[in-house]
Length: 173
Image (cartoon, rainbow, N blue to C red):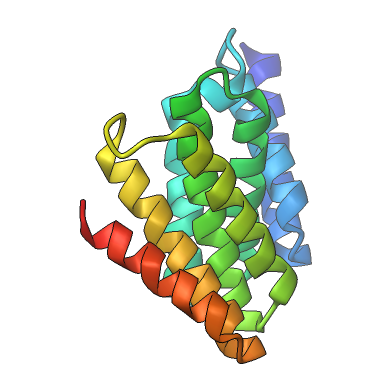
């Protein structure tokens, strides 16, 4: 127990250092190690993982700092890599898409927006409106946001039209 508590303090200090260094990947890596201390199952399957992922996303969406969006995206990528069901993959992809759209909107980062678009399309290929209407609608919304931003940046009317179609689909939920 003392060793585990020592490891927890060390990892917590490492997270704080990674935050100061603005290294979202390292924050996610140490968060995974922290959560693994208390669990026999893979940490990405824990409710605590999803809570930390959601917290990082919320902090990133409400602030002007992209660090928390990078942390949320990396946590979602790690969860996606370990997901065993279509539902879990869809949920992880939704968080990843949200983080990537927010990053792309802030930085005018075409790459992040293209990744968000592909992430949404991959998730929508596995999720139907009938299976999970809320997730399906959220994914359509994120797809509309990513396509809208990309279309506006490139002055691409076809992409803007596709964004409008995705927005209409999201509103049907």
